[in-house]
Length: 230
Image (cartoon, helix red, strand yellow):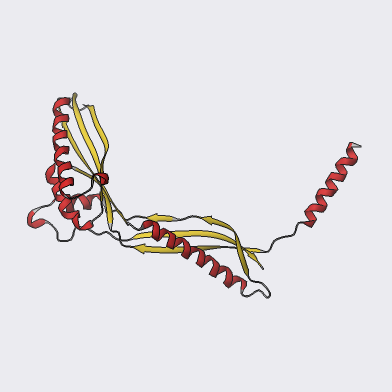
């Protein structure tokens, strides 16, 4: 009896599988690419001091940070747009001199919403005690809007491709989308570190007239879409 039931189950499954119809569809990729000029930047700077006594090193670093924070505030940057990222005080051993020293450092991230203030801010920061410029990342205040635009262009591009392929098939046209896979990315320009240090720390007549090459932000939206064929 069990063998009979097993045979009947197999036959039923095979019949059902044969009755499943292949759904005509087409899968294509689409790309939308937007290039925009940055209008903001996130600047990461740091103060670091070393010495023989931990209290002395910390005091020296704190005094420099106090000057740095005052410079940032004087530049009209809102309190919500700058923040201490890392604060360290540690003991370091020099294997060459066989002596210990103390290192104090603090990193500050600044969201600069007006790039016209970049040159003066950087020079003032260096004068106030900044001795490490860790990076500048250029951004756009309208990045979400541009990302949406890129996604829409990617979908339109996919639909155009599908329509082109199906146009040579008699009696068929592109129907609704049944599956969408996204693989989008945004590339932010980052100036070389050595260039930033050179541009920010020279002074007087040697100061170059143009110190920023902000480039472009490239927003790419890539999708894979499966359309029904009608």
